[in-house]
Length: 348
Image (cartoon, rainbow, N blue to C red; front, top):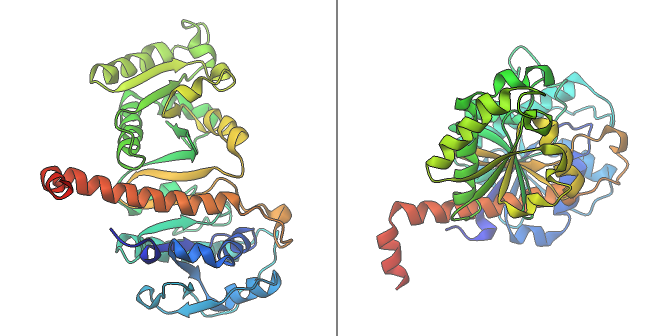
């Protein structure tokens, strides 16, 4: 296992007109953060120096040309472009979107090649990143293409963990996307993540219904009875502790969520509205199911407060610590499952 200070943390800078760059530098203005990781920001020293000056931050930046030059105990900035960037805080700008994608692509390449140990992504604007070569609705879909495995948006905060059967799908299309194959795939992803990433030996997972009141015996839709219940029963029969479907309207308000290690919602707002209500500012978006670790804060670009120096750094800091925690848990799990007998002998 690597020492904490040698864990290489890659950071894609996101939309430079949003709050991401401010939050990143303000976090590492606290030198104690460098005890936990070696940060590598994928941007440019010119750009980050502008941000540093704008917010009057007391932070030393170390410009590098490749990841191997990153120094422990320093805030490293990998130069992904040379030109000056015209930053206009709070404005949506397609050119700024291009820089966000350049940062993400280079950071992902380093993640794939294991030059960095994990990736934390600053928020992007899903509209201004679109181009002929980048047609993804967000980070998760792009990383699913570039990395191995099947991605799942997993929102985590303390003991609350919410996964999704469907994420960035129009409401009118949700039911047609939820198939037995998808349900099994997503539940298995959550189950395996709970075991290897969160060290929960026998995960208990709750699944929320597709329709109001889980369809009320077909009165408000048949998908819960014809698709969801039979598939959940099949998974239960395999030995996994899967429960539901539960009516989503009362599940969180009744505190029933506290009885489970994770909750799987049928669609984006069904899961994320209660999650962000309960944990906003401290929540983390973790991309489970892939062969590399990626986390992000639970907020967006926040154009309305960008450039004002008042952004909350809490969620991004949690994303860093959660990523480090998962990275270490996963390494330990892989070591244990790779050679459990050898490991046991060393511990005796």
